[in-house]
Image (cartoon, rainbow, N blue to C red; front, side, top):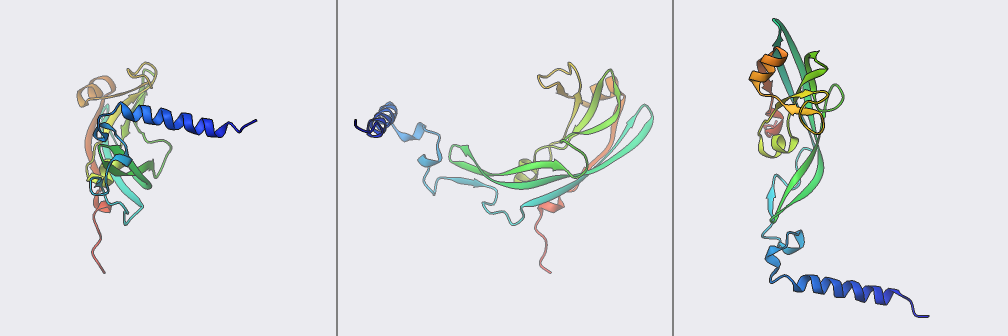
Amino acid sequence: MPHPFPLRRAALALTGALALAGCSSFDGLSSPLTCSRNEIRELGDATPAQRRYAFPFRIEYEQDGRRAVVENSLICAYRGRDYLGDCESSNRWSASLAHGRGLQVPLGAMRRDRQVAFDPGDCELLVNHGQDQPAYLVIGPDAGEADDAAVLDPLSMRRDYGIRIVDYRIDLSARRPQAAR
C-alpha cells in the first residue's frame, strides 16, 4: 500500500495554489512575507539597549477629606518583536508593578462593593513612544464592562466615590539615554 503523505502534500499544495489564485496581487495580504526588507517599518529600536525599565510613579489623592499617597513603579520587560501588519513591527513589552499583584493600584476605601483603582498604562507607549496614558477604573460587580471594570472620569470618581486626584507624577527619565561617564 502506498504511503499517504505524497497525496497529502499534493492536496495542501493545491489548496494553497487555489487560495493564492483568488488574489490579484500580494499587496492585499497582511503578512511579513509580503514585505521586503526595505518596506518593513521598525517602530522602536529593533535591539533595545535596555531590556528592562522601571517607571516610578506617585499619586496623591483625597477621599472624604483625608489625603493619601501611593508610590510604586511600573516595570517593563522586553519580550521580543511583534508584527503589527501593514509592514510594521514593534517591540513588545510585558508590564508588572514593583510592589503588589496585578497591574491595578487600589485607591481609597471600597464603596458599594466597588474599588477605585489606578491603571498605570501601557509599556509599549511608555518605552517605544515616551507617552504616558494612565487611567482610573472602578472594579467590582456590575461595574459596567464584561470583565467587571470600567474607566472612570474625574467627575464620576469624585461624585460617586469621593476621590479627587491631587497630584500624579511618573518619572520617564528611565527611557532617556544616560550620558557617557
